[in-house]
Length: 594
Image (cartoon, rainbow, N blue to C red; front, side):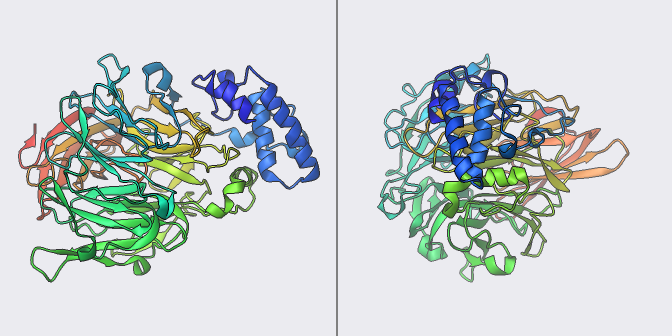
């Protein structure tokens, strides 16, 4: 079956390759690989009829031949109704990565989508996990295409990163990037992560040692947050079975203060994110781990003047599960003004049967793997697990993921990159739509986003500046041979919904305005009012979305006001009025609309 993938989806790639339900250009022209796979899976299922992974892969093999469902033996058929979903949401997405020049071919890796040269056009930085795999800078041109400028940008020799996260660490107005290495290698991975400085002239340089960040150790997750709101963004780096580190930013130079703040704990950390749990203006820290309880650290005043401290409230907050988890994020999914938590289950015990769990989901059978958790913030430093009630508890083996508003209705949706190292783990990446903060609906097959190659870093971004968010995803597995082309799902939906984009610039706060809280009050057609809440960040722990707030406004008739609470140490509120919908607004702290 892998032979068929390489000959068709890889060597003869097109926009429909490996997206289920496989149809059109996704159907294999060179058929011997899938034909042989069909015969082998039939033999396996005859001997082991309860082998659900083989049953799932048999159905996929028939799809690649254009013979699903008609020729699938009835006793092994997964009914085609599984792939039929409501298309009334008017969401239209199509992979155009090859067309515009961003279909980087590699294995698992990270991505940053951001306007890296401040020309008004989002650019893309992407990496690949192999130690010799070159990081690439794809610079957007005025015609919407991208030009790879890795050599001219000075990135040659910067290789091997599994994850990338960005922020403006030196407050010069240009986004810089942390490149993380050593994930899944454990204690043997004494690879340093890199701080890549954006020089603002189209070039980048590795300033890890100069900035005081040289620290070898196994990591694939880190998060930027100004823990003391002094206007300089700090960095938390989490490791795998190795002490985690908190680096305090001293005007562009970093000092390891992990022990002082009690954050030098050891766990197999797979995700970390900052978010303001209690709306006090200071970022709190959520930690996702394998084989141990997850952690939530509340950022509180210290008895020492001017200092902060972190208090572990994981148990009382009720956010320790899943015991095996991977990426995570903070977002306000129900627009009640409090940051909620989503954390994805990832149980390595079942790596050999990921396809089996995909079949169980499709057949309505109990699954084996760890379920994700959607935690609703109760507003009192406790959370309620609402995963099942909101339809957010499906086992997906999520690795990379992120959130955004795919239909501009004002309610945050999410996309999951899925899989595991085995070649057999070709299960669909998933797109979930938020239905007015009441539930999440799987719209994967209705939107043709069910890519079955391994999904890693994900970013939501308005790549083409047309007002709706597109999805960029890094595709490819963990082993050298499991390469694939990255995708970008262009959003050409016609929903009639309005939007606003806000580019915030800190003055007393950090330049990126990371941690700023935004409330957008809109007026509805019936005269009522609705608030939409956002926090400035790059989204989930595996994938880095732009720091511009892209907010859907639904069918609003106008914006009444925008309130920004700046992370300046005083949680200063700034009110902006007379804002037009369907526009990009630049706001400088203390100076209002620019």
